[in-house]
Length: 208
Ligand SMILES: C[S@@+](CC[C@H](N)C(=O)[O-])C[C@H]1O[C@@H](n2cnc3c(N)ncnc32)[C@H](O)[C@@H]1O
Image (cartoon, rainbow, N blue to C red; front, side, top):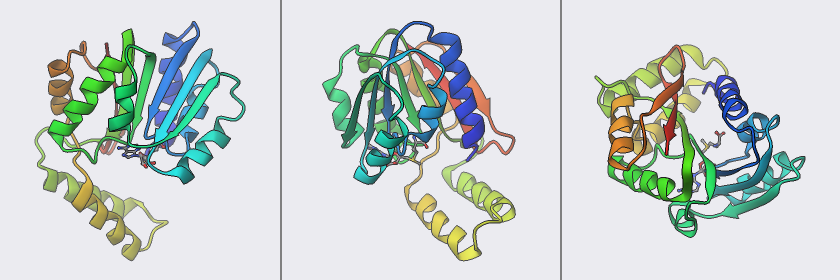
């Protein structure tokens, strides 16, 4: 899922834009591997990681162990947790964690993110990508074909299991639909920081 390129993109964005101590909210942080690699050369002052999974949160705490900044690891639904913050973070990262929400609910997430950002802050979203011309079904078929051809480490049964989940739960957005949500919720002009060759994964910067 282009983790290496995404981690590098996040690292480059942070090192170029965060020269002074800054705060990060990591929505659906998982094991925080990507964030821990991306933040390592920057003066992070506060890191809050949120995830539904207590196991993931334990790994996140481990991966962020070397950081001496103020840290908090929260088990919970970020849709609720976001209500606790107002103009508090310089950076909010949502990595592969909002594609389960249908379009309208993504709008609610974006609104809450904007309210939680300090003016001048940044929302960074990396996630699966639907091409603008594609329906959700087209996306699922394209992703399935790609994975069958390229995920040589998985058996066909394992790929089928992954895609039962994808077909049921994933609502990928296109660049245009994310743009629409960003404008509607008060963000500035969005910027595409990375798109992989297969056009299955994308990384956006949504400025406050
Ligand atoms: C595919 S993982 C990505 C983890 C990490 N951000 C990364 O880039 O590697 C998605 C994570 O989002 C979490 N997640 C999904 N929806 C969530 C929600 N509403 N509240 C909190 N965590 C959520 C899942 O538990 C999972 O750990």
